[in-house]
Length: 294
Image 1 (cartoon, rainbow, N blue to C red):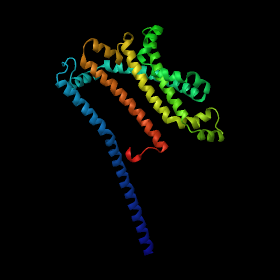
Image 2: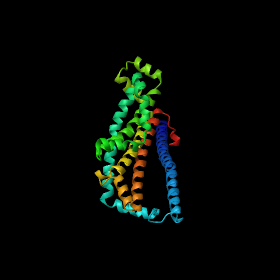
Image 3: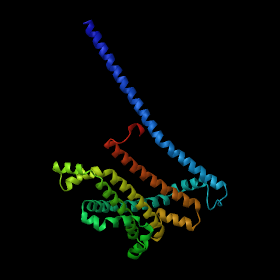
Image 4: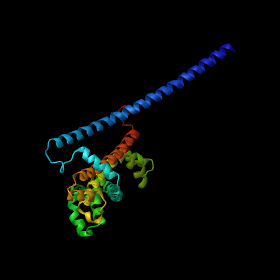
């Protein structure tokens, strides 16, 4: 009986020690996550500090007068003032609504065209090179035609945003499908995958990294096209970010202009971070992400 008691006590101590070890390992994991977060954050903070420092040095050099190139403090104060009012937020909402509508439509068009061209020899021969040619067209070159067709309206901006983004997304889909291993496709067919099921369960997952890259590039093109459109077609709205850039330039209000540019840059950074998180999730699922370095 005594031996059983001692054995039970030893087992209990071992279990407690095991639980303690798990708790310590969990704490170490949390610390490592914090370290990884800091490792990915401090370079961005350092780059921001260097950029602001260089900006301030240029201002101190007297290269341009303060009313033309204000310093970081002046612009930060203007940005805080704008953030306290409705004008900036109304403009941001208007611009983001346009961006979302144009981008969603561009994704639908780009995915459909890309899949059709990637799997059809006839379509690839007919319009494959045309998609790349459309992608290389500067967005600003489409605006004379857009204004001619739709006048100064929301449709003109939408037209240019879609033409700027859809070809990039389509090219991403085509590249992704092209690099799907033929052996994988044959294996899917042998297992009974045909038609849409082949795309859903075999081709789309295998091409997903390239498709995400195309979606990211498409967003960049759509965002640039939208900003160009709002700068040119300024009469249809007084609240968009592009319109605020135009008004601040016409009023020679440099702090307002630079603060609006900072907002546009921040939106781009936030969207880029979202695409980066999606890319890391895909690579982690595929087992190609270095866990120690992320």
